[in-house]
Length: 233
Length: 147
Image 1 (cartoon, chains in turn green, brown):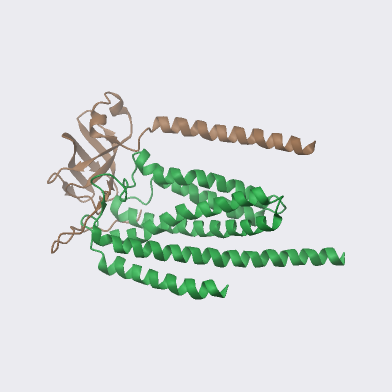
Image 2 (cartoon, rainbow over the protein chains, first blue to last red):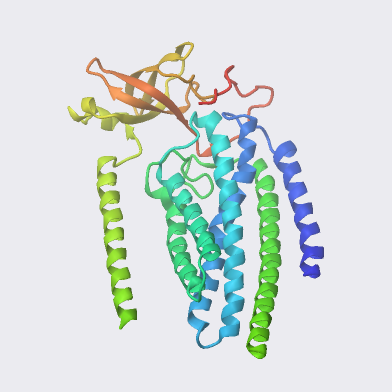
């Protein structure tokens, strides 16, 4: 556990500090929105991470589902990763929603609207809230399997979230990055984007790794206590 | 035997629930096909335009904003089409509501040819550009008031 902490944490902090400096001091003030636009340098990375980590969760869940009978030990490791990445997704999704709402109020005039991008992203949030509630409050052998099924819904929702601003008319801006003509970031804004993407990614990977290791320890401890009960029975 | 029974019941319940949700979703989508309509679509809607609560999108025509407190009148334009909008609502317009901004007006189209809006939302551009050096991005005096 110490290795990931000693390497990952300083790296993440350095990247995030540079990202903060870039976002707040170096990047230019935006023409129509002013300084509030700087939230973008946090909103965008959080949202992107919230669309990446569900696939870690999804793949780990698939591995769990396919190996739980044939290779239970691997299945447990996969499940630990699934749990860790689910929690991380929820954190990023919450930050994405919160930064979005804080940004929306002054520039759109509303905290929220039920357009396709916001609704589908909220859906992702709800799926992972229910995932974690399921894992916390159900007992018995089926918990991990049911949770794995939920991850399928998340995996389906992510492309919808991503494409929503391309498929439908939304309140949320049309694609800024990768959009057509009349879109895009001024080149001077890109460094802030890259530093923050890197920083939040490293932070996310570090937290998932730590959480995975904690979960594995809990699994081992649980296994050992079960063994003890069986042996003394 | 019991296992099959439970599986069957769960499946039926799932089908019913998913089916209901899908039905609601489809009818909801049909009722509100687009998040907003363009001025051109509004004006070609015929009689429907006057009976529906709508959201219209357009760009604010430069120089057309007249404001008194929370009341505002302005013209939206989009590809040569123009729409006069009269806004009376509780909140002052958002900070980004100024000349050439993309705006959404929510309300009803009146037979007098004026769109009576009860809500104005701004839509942000997809392009982020630095403010011209020396020029401060124009800030509206009012901070958005909490609802």
